[in-house]
Length: 319
Ligand code: 13P
Ligand code: SF4
Image 1 (cartoon, rainbow, N blue to C red):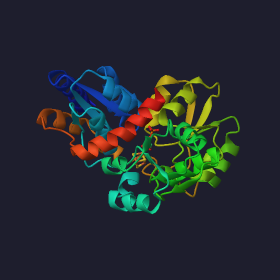
Image 2: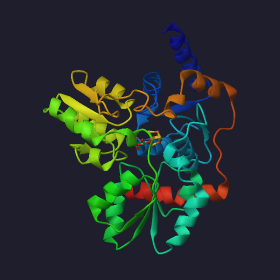
Image 3: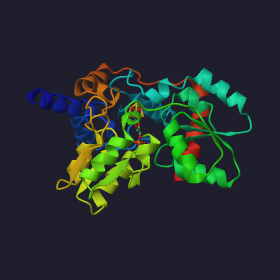
Image 4: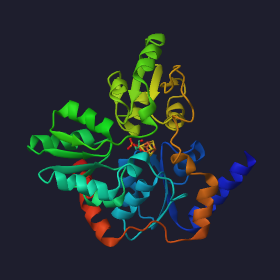
């Protein structure tokens, strides 16, 4: 505890010295989320992180999250220095969608509008017409569908399937998944709901269809947090990375949050419901990268320019 406080004080000083601001995701450890908020930074979902980083006057951003979040910040603000506590912190969706293979997939379907989830590399984003995050994917595909567009979607198959089912859009899906959300189990969730008939079920749409089908609220991390705080229920079953419970419990201290089951026995396997890459963001790693003074994330200019167009399409749509 004392060691943690020393790290926190040190990072505060370093942020000031470097005139840097922290942009954190809800899945990183509680100390980092609190530190971001206490130092004028933010905690949010991936769309909010992108918007905040782009709009903020600071010339250095410390992005506590995974690689695609740092890359998105760099693409939107090429003139800024984007630091990340650990640049090896990636995402199974990004890893499962190599740019060469995705380029081939696009080439096989030249008549389709390419929509990719933000959880991808800059190279994959550069191949897309649109980038979407979970908070706006449904609205954007609805819009494209109304325009008569046929969609090529990647990489998350569960989110893609959910959107396809909601919109009726003609979509061909890449078959990627998130190693955390893919573990939530529909049958065990049904039993847990029986034990807690008054509970509302909050589900991130990267979860399998059998889990999404039982949700009272489906949405991005921010949407789930907002639902937990504003809805009148006292008990919530939460199907997303358990890092979100920190802010839920902070903002709704009298409510009760239960982790959705990931294992066959109905229990939540702790190591399953935490993203291993988000966990690479530690206080020590933050201090280290701020001290080092390196150049931060880089994205080759042609990739950056192409990816920027597809991300900007989303931001303009969201505005
Ligand atoms: P959000 O955009 O909902 O925060 O999701 C990001 C993510 O990686 C979910 O696993
Ligand atoms: Fe990727 Fe899943 Fe981790 Fe989110 S929780 S960063 S989708 S692996």
